[in-house]
Length: 227
Image (cartoon, helix red, strand yellow):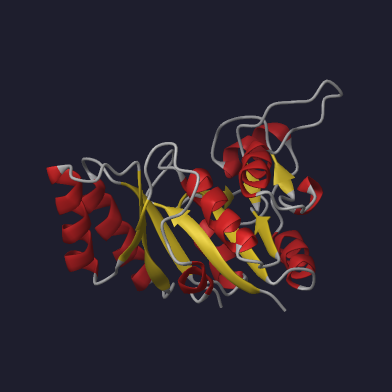
């Protein structure tokens, strides 16, 4: 059985996929049999044959160098760049929790470390019409602990603290924070880091800069976060 962790963000476009790619790469390069999983992926382009390209999965696969087939990475892929509940309403093929769990269980039997990426922030609705599924339901059903990715810039104190408090209220374990688009020495961003740590009691485990190709974190410390 694999060890697993869930990567959520304080919102959309904070860089979850970029950071996740670096996380998976770190595991792979340290000799771990690593895999990637995302329950629902929106905003994808089509191939010439009309099939959808799971863009986030492609990026993580290429950035990390893992050999995992794309077909294993995401059971629900949508074209519209909307929340999955709305994209599936327009396109059909709504998310079914049983399928999400089944495909995740298959990875558990094949890989040692599975990194699960969320869609948007923790409150993102995954399905609303056929089933009522929030992203937090996926986290709970798969029994995952979490890392939170946040943009290092202005406004992050509010978004980080609200996200952490909501997840704690819902009984979701949070292992730590990762700051993306961080500029070392920037007075505000350095203070954001200190304030988020102080106000949440969580550590900023890594700070990622634009264009980074490596996660500035010890591989074994990273692996120890997985359960």
